[in-house]
Amino acid sequence: MTTSEAGAASGGAAPAPRERAGQGPGTEVVTDHDRGVHGYHKQKDEHLKRLRRIEGQIRGLQRMVDEDVYCIDILTQVSASTKALQSFALQLLEEHLRHCVADAALKGPGEVDAKVEEATKAIGRLLRT
Image (cartoon, rainbow, N blue to C red; front, top):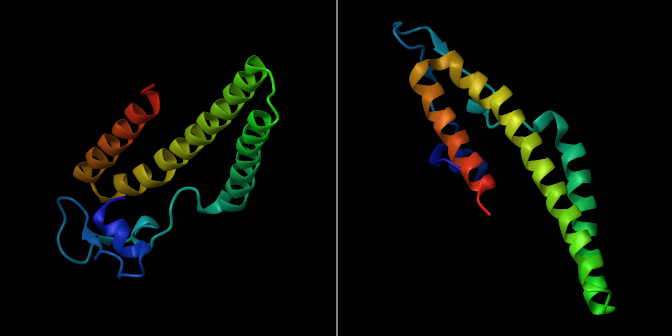
């Protein structure tokens, strides 16, 4: 989370809108992101439902260990849980690219570069094992 996102998330004021690159005053572009609306906002309920399902899978893992279930069966469930989280992350990343990077494109190349770099680092973290 960037400093401006943290400020908006904690109830602070949204960052001031920036002028469109290469243009003078009066050409400010205010995007959803400036208002604290993120790419996943429209599917928030679906995402929460999906995360609750994944949470249930994790609880199932705890129960399996508690009940001394065969190791391979537990590992199969670990794999399913991992894939579910990876799928969720991929969906969130796609929404970030479609929404946040698209919003940055309205503001100019510097903004796009920063969002692409941010997304690239997130992808790197997702790919680490």
